[in-house]
Length: 581
Image (cartoon, rainbow, N blue to C red):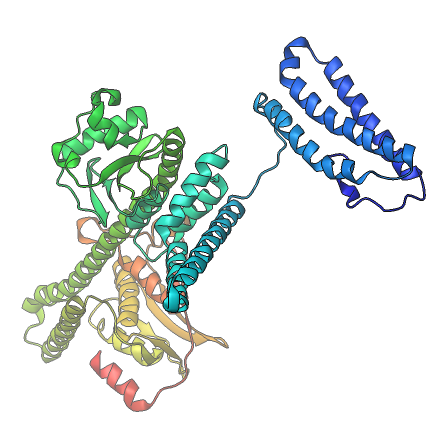
């Protein structure tokens, strides 16, 4: 041990210094062993005596070899050849001492992958040696067909070797044997956790299937069933993976979840069938016990709540589990439960968003219908007074035509499940004139300040019209008949700016900040939906613009609508858009 690095002995010793150095080294080793044994307690002598005896014999023999060489001026070859045998005889003494001291640790770990591949290559080497011997035997005694039979046999043996090396079942069995007999723990937890986390993060399968597959792979299983908790705190089947899904009542599933919540145990079906009393009088349904190859049931616990559980199919390789398997499955179940909780939360959020979109669409539709109804109601209320006036009749026809057009578009939007159409380039000035024309009979009449400016924006004609219509309508409702509503159009280098100013009652800053653009918050009581201002700002922002409001009580309100400019379109397109409106 101490002098193995010398290699082959020198033939001629010209100097005695190396020999003296190795003698001193051997004597130092003997002194250290003597001090170790002398200074240990009597209780420790039983653990140390074989270690000291083994190491002492090695150092003592080395001292004898070098002392003899120094005395006779040459190294005895027979003594040197016997040195390896002497060291081999001393090794069992050292091993006995190590087995009596299981707490000794060198912090030296051998990679399981290295052991596995080394064992595989060693086994393949022994196999090839045996097959070569058998091939030689066949050739020797095979007569005239000996060479043909040898070649055929060696080819078949090589093919069989490759089949065995690439068999997942054989490889897994070798891993289990090596882990059981060569390592303190059955699993390399770092490797297992990396593999488990990687399987959970894959996106080829849905989340429940990934959980089922990842937990099953920990015990070499290739099938399972997973149940999950719903919003009513009952459990239902999520999916089954290469295993028949049993029909189990919700009451039995609830009982199983309560057992998991109390104990956090892994249920071994083989053990349960033999000794059911171990499981705290758990009553598993017959339909569950009769499932072919049902093996383990693992709880998915998150924040001390059972989010689900996984039934694992029997493994073809691993026939039973121990405490280490159970601990690994429980920890993996808790990790998987967090993913399942996230999955269920995301599903609930998607459903809530779908309902929110549906409710928002319904609110917008009702809001549009309310505006159309308001126009029709205004006609009815003024009919008795103005029905004999030709201009009133013309206005009625125009209003009804506009209502029919808007109702038709609304029906198309509902049929297609969408709001809005393909955006086009729109002349803001012409669009504002068309919107203002609808309020010609109202007091005060909105006024567009004359300007030669032409500003084009890229938007949906109807949506943008509704924005201006809503703001002007609100201005009319807030302004007395002798008041004023002025609309001004201007532009900057990249934006069109529309200002709608009224002399109405105004709003305070708190209302503007907290309520004006809040959905479903209305000051009009039952006649208002509270979505007009919110929808207007959303439409403008979707176009890349914004709405700003300046107002104070008793001083009126000004809406500043900013929209990004767009290039001027072909005249025919613009005319068609205005006529369609």
